[in-house]
Length: 348
Image 1 (cartoon, rainbow, N blue to C red):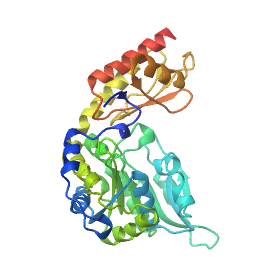
Image 2: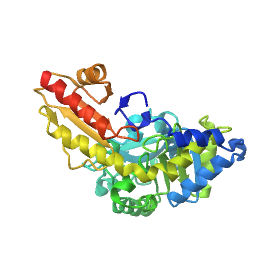
Image 3: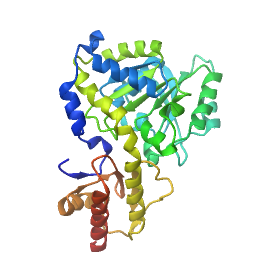
Image 4: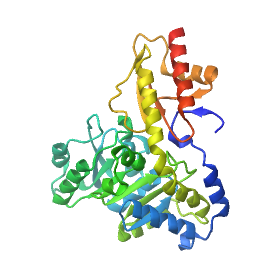
């Protein structure tokens, strides 16, 4: 890459192996089901998460929306996390496009909704009320430092859904990060959900794309929804080829990103003026804040890091920031980030 960029793991460029695979990819028309590289990616992706079928989509947002619209319909309701990515960062698509009502619930420090509150939120059969059709969950949970949520939580959500005839969809944008952090297979984390979307273009380094996985019947419906969203791609194997490298090579190195995030957290904890909790840093995301006495705002720090140290960082609010590790930032880049922050805060 041409810069030191901690803003997100979405900034990653494809690896040299990906570029070569994209150049050599076998192609066909995916809308006709004739792209062999897309077909292989969908098959391998579904297998990794223990589902029957997969659907290559342009983004995690498209995958989540296609999943939601395949489970629920206009006037239905979905129970979801108040600070979950689908509700907060996906342009309100479930409501604006699908007419589906979100029922947000608070989460704990690990991104889990209270199970009793989830059950209590399920609507009775009353024509005055929207119908409870879907429970949305997330893993890793981005707003909680990318915390990897263990499978027993999803097992409990499954039990609630079964009691009320509901479906469960998992936003697994960083599912493989969660699996790596927990020492589990991705399928261990998806065994209790009906469908799951995971991103190839975040920590797995592909330039574009996500995969939505579920039963064959579900994916057949989701393919129709994808088309209605403008997501029918043609010779998409040139993109899917990079996704195959993501699955087969990049998933095995995520522990390096987690170790670098831990280095950032421990280094920040030693800098006066920084407020953060290190115990929940388990994957590749580090949220931290500037203490009230710090003379710099988050925007000031971001601007001066870029100007003086050539380091990009994300401001999440007036005094809060996020650092995200990925393939293109290693220990040297972590040291430069910490050096820059320490220098700027000491200078005021």
